[in-house]
Length: 285
Image (cartoon, rainbow, N blue to C red; front, side):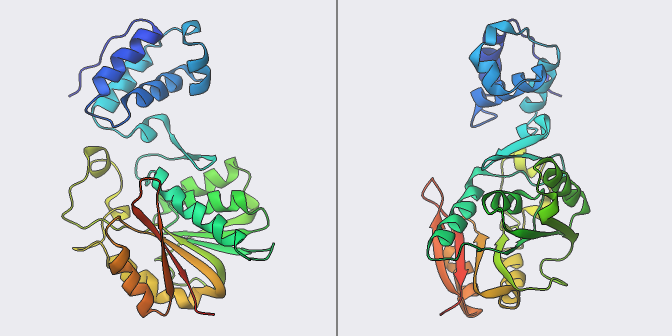
């Protein structure tokens, strides 16, 4: 059981919390600030602008103790900022990652490359979780509508709440499903961030002990869900459409071969860390 720490003023408390979280988090100072802002009920920017105006609430020590026990920061504060959006999340829902913004960047570049002003019209997000990718794309394409599919009704409840909160409910639909089964195309843009971790791969405690295993692991080689998803994409994707799949950093060749076998032209997009992160699938013209 993690012992609850004690704190003094805000500035000193942030330093103490940062020290306590070093070795637990890759971003201990940021975590300390986010937890303080959450405990105070203010935005982090307001906290940093004038920390001396605040007193440390008793809640802060309990929040830091939860983080010291490896509970994800997003579950503690109830959200994760992604792209330009604030996505509500909670235990049992996959937490959005900054690396996934690579998929949104790829969509925007594709749209600029000779697409008509009305592209995309219909968007499909397979494995939508809390609606992360779908809502980010719809925020950039105000004429588009989208369908998010997920096997978890719990995750879909978060997705619907996020769509409402972001003013996108009238352009979204969410349904429970097993990837593309029962979905009728065509869609101009298909997004998918499936499970791609091998069953025996070791993950950090924040992830392995808290996030839903069904959204992480995909068989002995991490490719089980790609083998189900990719063969169904030709049926769902419009002739001039784009499918964007998130991949693990070492999966470019293996997932690309599956896509080529399904008749797609494959390009790879790297994330800001220079790691392969997304495959872009199009049809030959």
